[in-house]
Amino acid sequence: MSFWLGNSERNFYGTGPWREGQLKVFWEVKTSSISGRFHEDPWGGTSWPGQPSVEGDFVYFPSADGNTYCIKRDDGNIVWKFRAKDSMKATPVIIGDRIIDSGLDHHVYCLNKKDGTLIWDYETGFEVDGSVVAVDDKIYFGGEDHSLYCLTLADGKLVYKIPDVGSVEGSVTYKDGRIYLSTEQFYLYCFSASDGKAIWKSLIGADSDSTPAVANGMVYTAAEDGVVRAYNQEDGKLAWQYTTEGGHYGRGSEHIGIWASPVFSDGKIYIGASDGYMHCLSADKGELIWRFKAHGPIWGTAPVVDGRVVFGDKAGWINMLSADDGKLISDLKIGDNINSTPAILDGRIYIGAFNGKLYCLGLEPPPPSPSPTQKIK
Image (cartoon, rainbow, N blue to C red):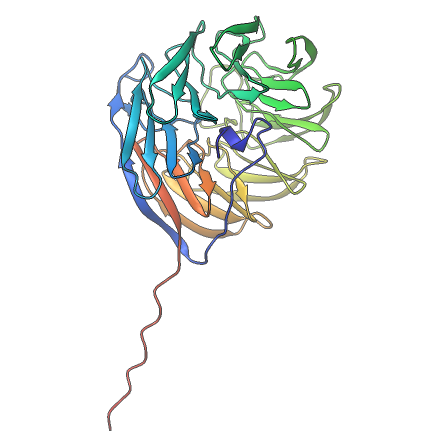
């Protein structure tokens, strides 16, 4: 799990196997908090664009306290941390011996994976919430300065910058030489990765924070009006749309709409919404297959691994469902406001919450029933 949603195509969601039993916390690590221009109260933990990265014996994750952390996978002990100038939000991307991360301080950082020392940094015009994709020694990302960037991985030199595409809060997706991204200015774009030229753009009609899913000849995205949309991958024409309960336009309540990204798995689309439901749709027509009511609004994205859907909700619960029918397998309340996305590897779940903690969870079988006591006559 070296990228946001596994790779540059955003279609690797993790590995099992799953054990039978109920969810349990195996360890947790506490980070500190920070107060910023958007959060007068202390703000901690991982945010909705973020997902831990897991490689080998280590877990890497961004924190609202302004650090990117490397911790031991077996016990959560801190190996190193890199201090930025403001909260870190993007998933740390692991490329060889390097880590690429970003957040609210307008910088993209390249770090040494072994010790967290800085190799290079690139300053953009505003925040970079989404994670980069890496292809052929180049990295691509969108920023909230309304630009699409391409940099060299080796030294962070600018290859090209495409301005005026709109503010990008989600991550970009790479597929077959093309870059796909959604914007707050209501558009979905398809660009040529080689030179940044626009191939097509389509009107979404609302602020979109989602990372597009590209599969099945379609590009899937969602927006704050509460609508999931599918577009033809070649020309950007709208194929179908599905409306969740609620949604808002422009300035409105955050209790409605969609902030999560769609996940494509086995001919289905899985996405949570602020209506509190996890929705499973047919990928070809956008028809509802099932939906599950969680304990609170869902902002994080829901990986599908070995037939199970795993996600957090803003009431502080981790939920595990059957991908086939949406039935609850297990849930566990672990903290406050979980709006980040879990990383899942080898049947272990790594996820952060707004209480400043990162958790490692898994399934544990129930204790065996006590042996019956034989009566002595």
